[in-house]
Image 1 (cartoon, rainbow, N blue to C red):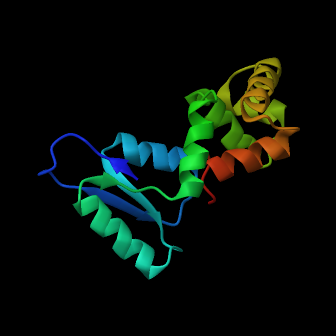
Image 2 (cartoon, rainbow, N blue to C red; image 1 turned 90 degrees about the horizontal axis):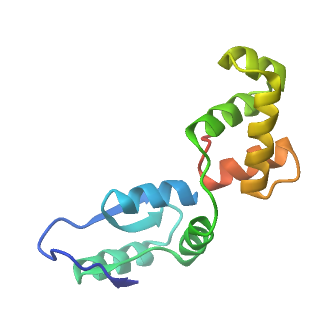
Image 3 (cartoon, rainbow, N blue to C red; image 1 turned 30 degrees about the vertical axis):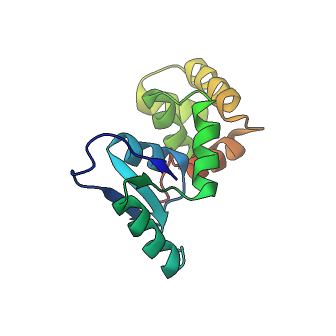
Length: 140
């Protein structure tokens, strides 16, 4: 928790969600949220969060804050990389992804290589798994 600064008389938004990915948390915070709480949190944690936010503090669970700290030290995926990863997650080969996006298979491979480096992934499956945990991809 830390002082939220700014106008203390304005609305204070706390996001209550099932998503623990750092991307969703970062979007909520950049959108003006001063709190981010998981629905799995205990009731007393919710009450504590509301009280602290009312006092002008920000409140983010430690595990989410740790993810955010890691996120800001890492490169973000581009919109194109997320698009390719979404198609890979659906089980498509590089060739099919290239055909669907009207790009070459080599271009898809290049994007996959960049994504795996950014996500520190060992392979395509690991990249999809990390992207889902971080919130780049949603489970559908």
